Image (cartoon, rainbow, N blue to C red; front, top):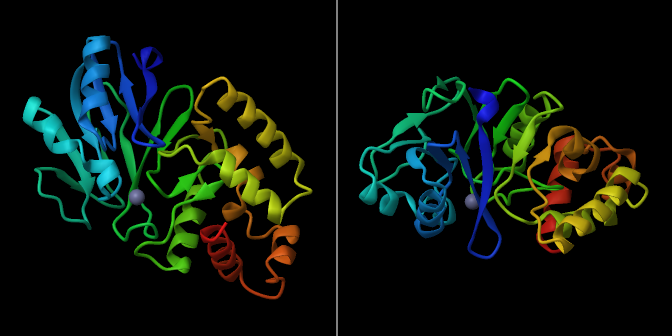
Length: 258
Ligand SMILES: [Zn+2]
């Protein structure tokens, strides 16, 4: 049954993607910041929404939850245990494993404090490849801002993601990839994988295609926040004699002002 699964990005707001997984009749949506484009897509494709997965409490990730629930009271909602929500939900945190709907594999919950303190990811092993829904923690060639957590917390969260299988598909929630690549090239101009990714990303965007999903192998090769051990990055950030957390913190600070 899993081979019939499809996943599509629903564009919302300026640069968000709301990921919709479906099997032709039933659907699950991740981080529905806006209900309208989700409702439109469900109607267009003739799908019934069965579950909503939430990674963290920011409005552009949950703004559509209550309107969707009002229209479809049977929908089950899953959300981080360490954050508070004013809608009914199944609270999740590490090491929970949950089957959100019977036509998807079990999701392994990963705690990712940093962007927010309760932020979680959903990791699923499909037949053909693993999927990661990581909210605003990992972006194409970037990572989320530290609104609530410390650099050390975010660094540790990213270490957990680095340990996942390299072929994992990464369903990031914002189209920040090209700007992130330009920033990354200021730190690692000699990274040929990064140069190639700039070209590939430009081609996709020129064709009005999303640059996402990404995959972990590509992020490991090009994402500076996963490359705090790179000699070129450590030199560029003047942190050769510091811990990787210090390098991470410096990259995040530079990116905030880029
Ligand atoms: Zn956020």
